[in-house]
Image (tube, rainbow, N blue to C red):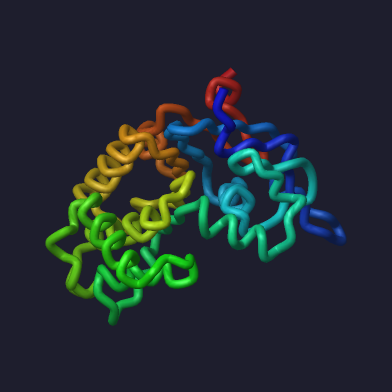
Length: 229
């Protein structure tokens, strides 16, 4: 039996008051290796809080969060930061690319503090860009790329450290329909190759791309079947 990539055991987050605000209600959630899970909910539902917890950006105030079987609550901040860098690849709505650095440099920079040798960093960056269909654009600046291509560079940057989890926050939010479809197809291909993909979105059409969907509303996370019941 394989170890889940994500395991929440009554994980919740309450911001201190007065009065205290329960931003994310205690819940259980398991995401296994190779799953494609989407998390859907309206603005203000708690999606960002969930992202911050799952991405080890915020620590929960209750429960236990295991990432690849490791108890993240028992770690010091430095250890948790290192774990995040090794095990989680982030893809954001706004790309967050350096405009005056080439696609190759943007991807390579993701490994600067990883201990990977310079020559290997460049090779791995080229491989990651080829994997997302941009092997011919390695020397191009983000300002000369389409929105869809910039998001592909961001995905390559997320993949280059060979993470356990690809965590995507509204990855099509800044894209037109054609580029959004292209990025979703790429995520589907990565999932088919065995990558664990977690997409957070408010778009029901994007949510339907997942093999499994959970919902968040008013800080309460439920499996789709539970939400409908």
